Length: 118
Ligand code: FES
Image (cartoon, rainbow, N blue to C red; front, side):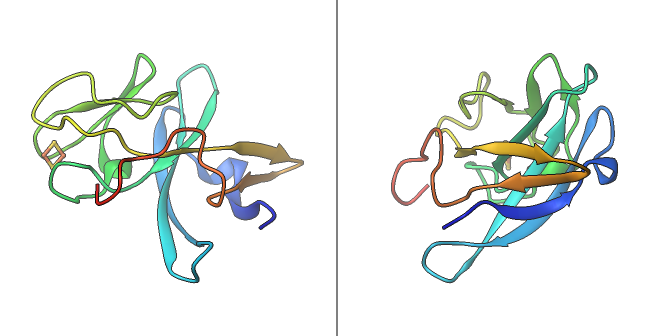
């Protein structure tokens, strides 16, 4: 699958995150958080917290991490690993490219993969 347009670059707050839904390889939609750090660096990470399935895009973005708003686990934006409890399972990180004014994300080829069932 080619990368899909997720949003406009201008749609993503700095710092902050935007939740988008993209078509996955099996036809089901995949919830992705497009995240921008305060220095402008963009990331695409699974939007679903591995602890209790809330949206990570609603959390704070700081120091290369996004913090789950519900219980405070902080997920590394490059690896998807939670750096603090209560979450212990990583979330998927996806390849992101910028094409002009658009953000493209490839959900079919995660850089890091969450374990099955996460
Ligand atoms: S739901 Fe995200 S840390 Fe609990």
